[in-house]
Amino acid sequence: MDLQEYRFSSVRIVLEKPLKSIIAGASRVVFVTGFKGFGMVGYISVVHMAEKLNCSRVGAVLTKYMPEAVTVEDYGVTYPFEIFACREGDLALILLLCHDIPSGQERSVFAEAVIRWVKRLGVDEAVFFGGFDSRYKVGEENLRWVKTSACGRELEEPMMASGLYIVGPLALLTMYAELYHVPALVLLPYAEASRPDPRAAAIAIEKFSELYGVSIGVEELYEKARIIEEEMIKLEEQKEKSTAAFTGAADKVYM
Image (cartoon, rainbow, N blue to C red):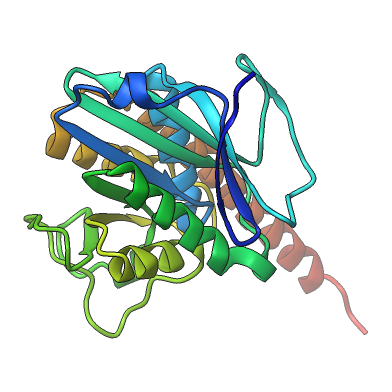
């Protein structure tokens, strides 16, 4: 196998399959990624897109301190940081699927390596998915957004307000995209911070579909959200019953 490799510091981006055939002739090349942050929105969104668009795994990002966990999917043994690619008409998509969070020791160099590689590929735009704490919702909008200086997009939803922060690896990607003049758009649907939020992921994907004219079904995500919410209601009801029973028993105890 003829592997293609890009190296920056301790990070290597290795391609098992060439991207030329996917990128060739595309009117736009878009890079997409996200992490397991608020509501796991970034991770859920990228997994769903890769599945629904039938993207193929083409490579991986390798680091000095690799997470020591793999599983098995239909396409084989997984890597902690996988690269997928596919075509949707004239649109070429490159997805970085992060099953884990990069080690804190090289989180910054991981983000810089990815952005430098994206820049080298000649990607037209990057889209980063994340979650925005639902406690900060003030209107009827479903999401907030941020863009780098090189990105010319304007969305109807309000931008993230000054004084609030993106944190973690998503912040580093955004920072390096700004530094290297990569047009990047960060979509931040309101999400529940304490649990996976597939509804927020569905909102992010719907916005992506609107912006790029790609049809990506999200019915499964809304159904998963409904099931999670039903289970949470049941747990809350059980908690209330247990509390009531304990209170009643305590009333009958005398010292």
